[in-house]
Structure formats: C-alpha cells, structure tokens
Image 1: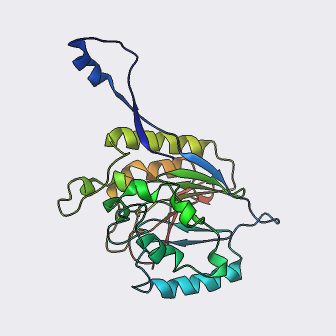
Image 2 (image 1 turned 90 degrees about the vertical axis):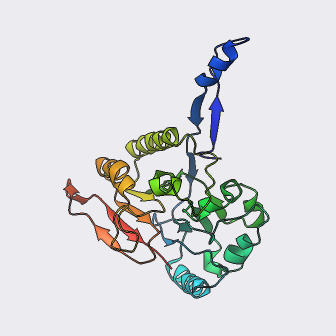
Image 3 (image 1 turned 30 degrees about the vertical axis):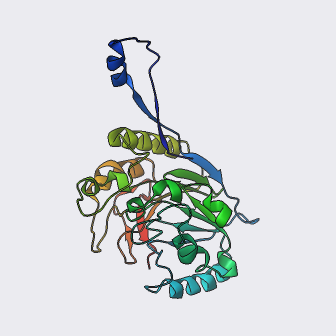
Length: 278
C-alpha cells in the first residue's frame, strides 16, 4: 500500500557489543505513493463529486446529502467521487470488521450514479481509529468502490489529482491529550513528511495534465471555524505555487468556501481552495 512505513537496516555487520551501535543505523524509508489511472470520457471531459467529513451512519444530514449527490451525480454523469477525509466519525474504524464501514458508506451512498470509484484520503478523525484497517485492500472486497490511501496520485487524463495525507503535518495532534491517534506508518514524523513532500514535488514537476489538483483534508486557507493551517501554509503552499497547481480541495472546516489567490503567475490563478462539505 502507498505510504506505509517500513525500516531498512544498514548493511554494516556487527557482533557482540557492536550490536548496540548498529541499532542507531536504522534508516527510515517510506514507499513511493501509488500511481493510479482513471480514464476520462470519450470526448475527453471529466466530471466528479467531492465530499468530506461524512461518515455519520446516515445522521447529521448525511442521508439527505447522499440523496442530493445521487441526483447531481446522474445529471453530471460523474466519473468518480473524491473524499477529503474524516470518513468515519468520531474515531475512525475499529478494524476491518467494523460495521461503521457499511453503515456509513455502503448503505448510504446507494444511488446508481454513485456506484463509481471513490478515491479517499484520511482526516484527523480517521487517525483516531485503526488507520491500517481503513487503508487495507480487504475493504474493497466488502465494497469495490472503496479506495483509501495515505497519499497517492491519480492520472485522469485531462487532470492530475495529487492526494496528500495532511493530518501528520499538524503539530497539535501530537500534543493532544484528549484523543489517541494511530501514528503507525508515519513515524518518525519528520522523515515521513520529508518523504511525502519530496514525492509530491517529483509528481508535480513531472505532471503533464492540463489541470493539477491537490487534495487534502485540512484547509490551507479558511474563513471557517478551524481557520488557516499554519503548517500547510509553511510547507505545502509554497510548493503548490512553485508548480502552478490550479486547485487545492479539502475538508475539515464544515462549510463551503471557494477562495481564489490574488497571487498570479503567467496569467493563471495559482490556487483555488474549495471545500465540499456536509
């Protein structure tokens, strides 16, 4: 799976007391993000829906939004659905057999037009549960529409979608004493973020699609309750500007916003931040 962490030991050989020294030579390494492809329509066009912060077992208007999504999805003849994270409230999934998966996803998004591939990233609430379960391919056996990874790249011909795992960027979650987070696969944190940003830069610099769209859970800029995310302003925003990203799509703040940057390069708007929220 993309972005799952693993460690590779150095090739240095050691015996006896030198074994203690070798443990310090463990070098963190993270897999490159998975690259996926989704064809556009025959005429080259592409249509999708974006939703975030939705997994409520149908409550909190989730079922009502799902019904409207079905109607709009049919009207637009959508190709797929993008989820910006916080897929299962309040604390993610407890495991592969958690009934919340079907009760919040399979049994809610039942419209014919929504029986398309869903491409999902994780939100902070998902990190409060079993992250390894939520990104596990076994869930695709339960519902083939489901695909959730930490970070990955989707080539949709006319547009390139770059999905970014934003929760590990946020400092507050690592000092939050009120909740438990599943940090497996993202530690050591600095190495994980360095690898993520390097992979994103490589993907953006090599992108040839007409549109570059980055997807994450947390807002870069927001007029909502949570406001701006400082860590993303510092680490992610400069890269989006440098590689002329057309749009950043996120969730987290439970509102609908469309923010356009006044900073232009070559006549193009650098960033449009959009939320598709319940």
